[in-house]
Structure formats: C-alpha cells, structure tokens
Length: 70
Image 1 (tube, one colour):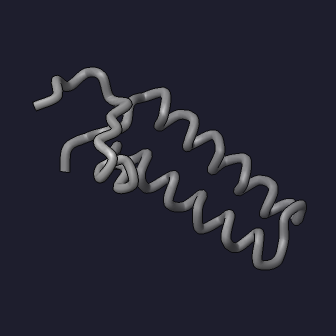
Image 2 (cartoon, helix red, strand yellow):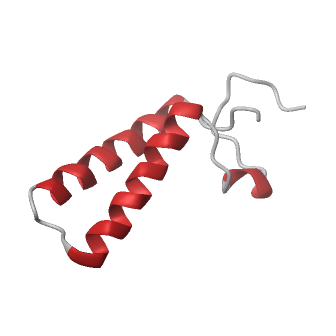
C-alpha cells in the first residue's frame, strides 16, 4: 500500500472527524444519521493515520506530492 494522501488531506479529514465527534457526543446529531456520520468519521481517522484512501486508488488520485509517481 503506497501512501496516496497528502498532509493537507489528512488534516482536513481529522478536523471533519473531530467536528462530527463533538456534534455526536453533544447530542446535536442523533439517531441513524449520527451513527452513519460517526462511522464515516472513524473511516476518516483510520485513513488519515495510514495515509491511504482506498477510494482514491481506483481513480489514480494522489494528493501526496512528496513521492514520485511510478
């Protein structure tokens, strides 16, 4: 698995996940929508830590500019 996410992309995903987490735990978003958004936030956190987005891979998207494309 090659990294395909840049630092800006990772930071934006972490901020979005944190916002969703705060809204969920303060009961601003609840029910099914809250659960779905928390699952997406968890995926954002996971992909940010490993710097790989599986959705980017089939489309050839790379926001990581530090590695040269082979």
